[in-house]
Length: 313
View 1 (spheres, rainbow, N blue to C red):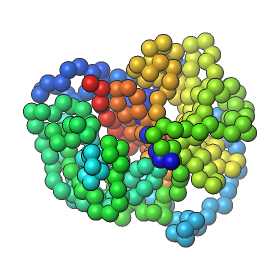
View 2 (cartoon, rainbow, N blue to C red):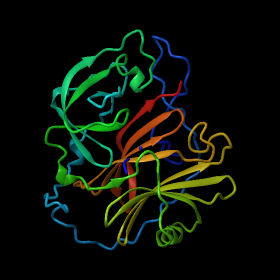
View 3 (tube, one colour):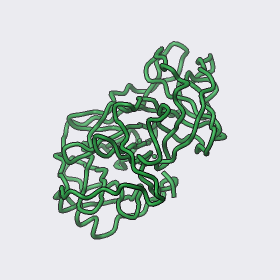
View 4 (cartoon, rainbow, N blue to C red):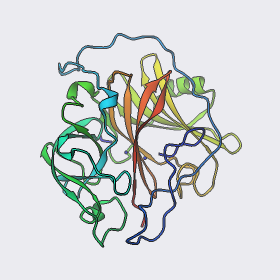
């Protein structure tokens, strides 16, 4: 099993993204078009029973808290062979400070891949403004090669500078491969329904370990109000990230997505000095959104670590 994108309706939107058009040399980089909703859902906190945290991982690695403020908002994706990675431009003309300091790519359910800076690549006249493997050699970005480990072709990763992320700060997960999700068990579904006071119509286990799981739940439609929620479940602890939306036949959460919220994958789950951190890739027909959520006030909250890829024809 392995691990995948975000539009957040309600009070806070993850990104305000423009619609797409045909690419031209002087047009700005297109980004996936959001389906915006004004509805909001109150996050239902889980039972907040404090649990003693283990001091080491199952393989004996000492657990080390990751420092949230040391993470850079830098994401990238792997090339066709998985031997190289290119960063996703944040803003046009923005340069990456000290690119040679980045030596780690994190993704695919918490895998740590050792990388090495190669060069900065400028966009050429063949650039389609799509962040895909077909445009890898034409787009602007910083290219890294793999020193140790294997990148999954076309998969997204978060980059980190030397010494920022260690194996001891990441939780070991078994993640869904290529969207082959399994459903949550009946007891978990009943518990989620009780917390949210709403019937679950679909569930998908994205990643799990022996003691915790990360899952997506889609709830019963109420009029035109739709709700999907990411949930972190560990013992008595449940943390939600809600994605409320207004029903739209052509695309409720994602453009051209119907009433399907899209494909989610877990990039990583980490210990940090400010609670759990959950990296997510959320993909739809137009592209993919990448973001990191932080445990705060009994829920999973947005951070300023976010990016997106556009890949529609």
